[in-house]
Length: 150
Figure 1: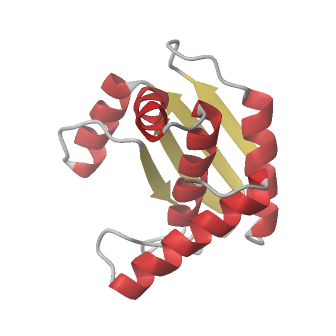
Figure 2 (figure 1 turned 90 degrees about the vertical axis):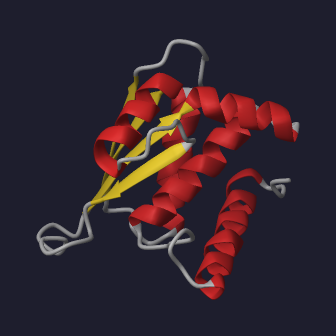
């Protein structure tokens, strides 16, 4: 299991050890404990630039995933899951609006991003596929934290 974490934002202090432990636990739970992924923690300006550059969407968002398992060459290295970019600034706003802890929100977004790397979809998906992803997110959060996400 290889997890690379880079924190490029300075507005919020995060527990990087907890993030790494959580990702390891999630990867084990999702049967991809031999996988490799990278996590980039950014602010809103940085995620907006990533969103604009790679997805042609000119706005900030909470999390973006780039799966290395998709496309014509997706099977070359099945251990390589992909990259997750997470805006801690957006996560903090969403956590405050929802009345939840910032690290809980970050972990929920890690789950969301990791599921995207593994092929789960909710945007251009059937309602059944969207429900499947939402249900799995909640199950994994409960496994990780021992209580449900609001």
